[in-house]
Length: 173
Image 1 (cartoon, rainbow, N blue to C red):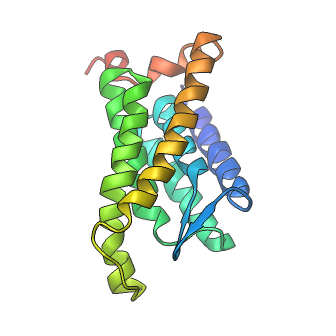
Image 2 (image 1 turned 90 degrees about the vertical axis):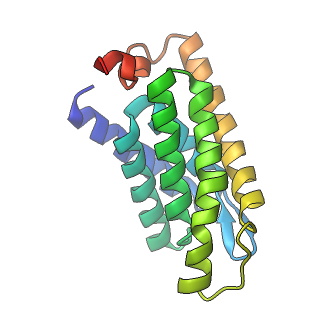
């Protein structure tokens, strides 16, 4: 896919994610669970590859924070999840691995990376493993949604050559 098309699709996914955040989120303590971000991460990981997926997560997190519908916790979770989902997909060409990467990247690694933000920057009382249940639930929900949509698109041959373009098999690596 050409860079212009990838940038455009990245912007569209980030915009849809940002707009939908104003009405689809679950507040948990001082964090907001947002399964649509995880859904977008899986789509971006499979359709666009690692760097565009991370850019999409960063843009979405930034816009959501600017509009007051997100929190600083969005950055480490969404970006780690998008990156791991894209890396696992690019190595295996399996959509299930992209969804698993999103859950592990956001639900575990992102949750652990959020702890210093909560304690040092926001001065909130938090436990090291306290974010894992909420982040895992949110990322699992969004990853299942992304997995389901991608499977339907593949079954109906709606995304054609886009699907395997971002795998290492296609790049000769």
